[in-house]
Image 1 (tube, rainbow, N blue to C red):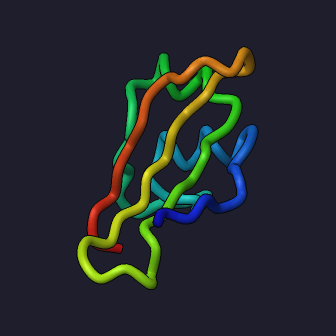
Image 2 (spheres, rainbow, N blue to C red):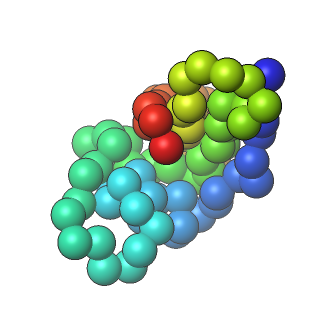
Length: 79
């Protein structure tokens, strides 16, 4: 069963969405969404596959605006 991690909020959430990394100075930027979506992000909800389950490992980030509307989902396979 997947495990929810702490939400990522505000500037930190927008930086992650824009860079694909929480680093303030990423070497290679890999935006998850177009800038117009990143600018609207209020929080990212982070869910990871359970480490207890055998099989695929993944992380999933769902972006929400300040009204609670889903802006998009980004999945990272094999972390």
